[in-house]
Length: 377
Image 1 (cartoon, rainbow, N blue to C red):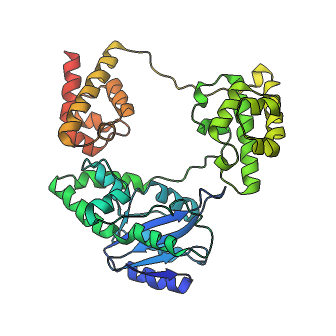
Image 2 (cartoon, rainbow, N blue to C red):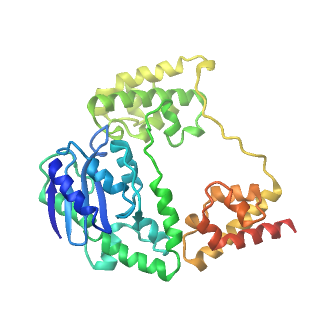
Image 3 (cartoon, rainbow, N blue to C red):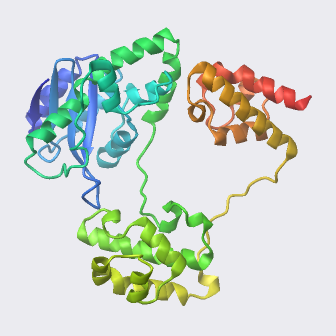
């Protein structure tokens, strides 16, 4: 596909005026999360049916024309796996995407298990996508030719892919189902993962005792400060498994850290002393000063509710195979738990339960209510 770099405000305004005349465009972003602490959008790719445009946000001072395109309901924006992109656009530009079509979400309604863009391009267009530039540093200039080709390839087929997938959704009478999910996806927003206490966003912290949690929090704050100063992603400073090991083992010397293989010799030389200080400080805290992980109040196990959950899960597995939608997407465990606890009697009651979709009620609502009714008898 032919492509053009957009590197000035005038060029952007002109091309965005043209985008507003299109019925559908493909959109993708490249960022630098693998290389910097403060992640940012480094390239915006947009494709019509005939041409691709590579918008360089580093050269653009006024992005408003592009934001107007994103927010225009008359222009369909086709993304693949839009969650990251939507959050990034919100973070950097406070942008909102309207009239979204997400090919990855759409594939879920068609029972397609291999939903990666490369797999879809191979299956539908016999195109081999080279993903070796996926983790490149998109913040550096100039781009290598291979990176340019990769970025164009990510959007070149999106509008055609939309046509194929939407056609299949129409055949299965599931387009309205997908549209409901698209609208929900449009509403996601960026979340700051660096709010204190940091352990709230750390996987596995909920199983730690209070002292280990204090050690973990101190180490997380140390890592955050180092990453900010060096402008590097957190994982390039000290990995999560390393922090977990130190939180449980609580080494108070660099030699102990090395002996339990929590950090490498290079990391020990750079960060060993400050980590020892963080651990020692946490160990010396009074018990009253120790942090605690917020506990979710769970209702006491109810035999009837448990029976409903079991039966709803069995129903889900059976219907998943029949409908051709993966079980976890058809009805996830959290929603099953809510349904079992609320025990709705009608479709209207079912829709009042948080996270229950209209499409789920249409697809399996009667089956859900039937199972709940059976449990009452």
